[in-house]
Image (cartoon, rainbow, N blue to C red; front, side, top):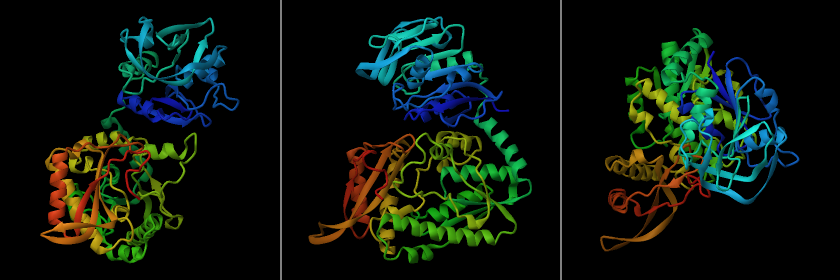
Length: 509
């Protein structure tokens, strides 16, 4: 049984980051909302209580019986979690005189404490809280302080209960990883055996037991998640996996042929389906982004359903769902408000009557890539930028036409190739060109033109939840702009989007 750490989520924006830091230390962990504590069995090595935007002083503050948990397992409270431990133990939590947010330095430290091993005086930590622990019970000992926060970390004597007011999971806490390692290894006695190779071995065995000799169908997108899921399933069930790659006519230039060739070299059983005209017909006359998404989704489902019925005795639908999708669906706040409808392959309708298998639903995106490398998947697929399911259909603002698709494919092709040749592609999380619903005046060859505008978008991000625009050098942008205007007929102006998310989104629709 895989040993694990349980993280109880009280709604902090950093909860997923805690999990990722734990995973980086080769320890498996799971996030569960505080009001849905899982059955804690012998596989659990410890429990972490997350931060929260709430105050423990609120009448309806998120709460959990940590005493019952701590009776069996080591507990680490982070920020709100530490305040909860202090309050439930008879301590006092009060509003801070000033909001304690940003960098601080530890100036008092009990280095002999297990949690503080290897952490130097003046170590930088990241604070983010409006309340502070003002009093602690007699059996609590202070093990770290900053200038502004006397009780920056504590230990309940003769127990494995710890609390820290700062956030070790963020990179601004320079020794945060060491502190987490101390908790996981020295206090919880985790063996640190959660590795890509171990995941592959256990997942393949689990898939073989789950699927037996059943037939599985999987929709490939050319992206990281579906590709890694496909290879894992292929290693588990071989020829019983049937992959379908649909050309919706909204892919990047040459992408359909290149992706099919990549998959064939990987030994996958892949069928390419050219459905461009079906998608174009459904999109005709539509300009609203949500209507376009629904139209693209409808045709995809129809095509995928038709192709699935051509395969005998299919019982399972393979999907590349990853862990953030799972977390989102059972979060403290519930599913997020719809900003846009889901634009991945998942969520096929009930009428398909297929059971779902999701080999990646315990992994974060960076872990998916590490597993992909362990499976020897080509870096061209693993390092591919995220690309929306509706493809260029939502990068063309307004009605989608064949003319606009051709223009955008060419512009995007020039843009991406320049980024790759200049060594910038791998520095950027996502990049793409956008066809704008405006025309502008230009002068080309002594003639006045009135042609289309293309916007370039490039962002830096970790998981797409937040993003900053990428500072691509001006001289590179100049080359890209010049080549697009000179080589793509119908474009006379190129602009660069310098909006961050929030308030903007990464895609324009």
